[in-house]
Length: 118
Image (cartoon, rainbow, N blue to C red; front, side, top):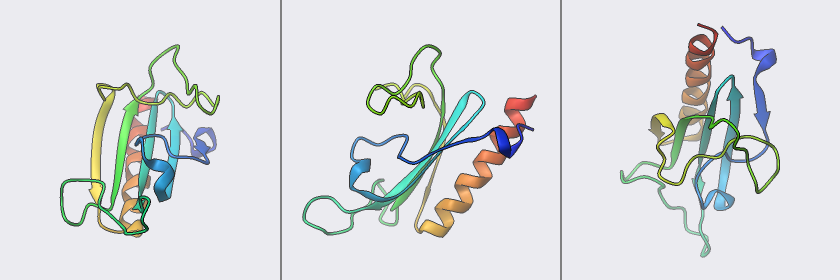
């Protein structure tokens, strides 16, 4: 397992083009993957909206492969933003609450920490 001390925590969202309107985000790099969670989306106008197709999809988490030689050009952090066609997404899960989303984020971090160490 990749030890938690080697996980890299970013202070910004790792996906979703409108993430700057989300009040919730977690982004963690573990080996060759990024685990990114966003949610609590309030677009201009101030009314909370879902970010998925379901009526309770207020949060989502994506696991994305890091594309070698590519890094974030916006923030310069090297977090490897997803491809435009999302071909590097290997897993996703939706949630209805921040608590559920945090639980899923950590579950996926642990899952991929084990896979990355194998």
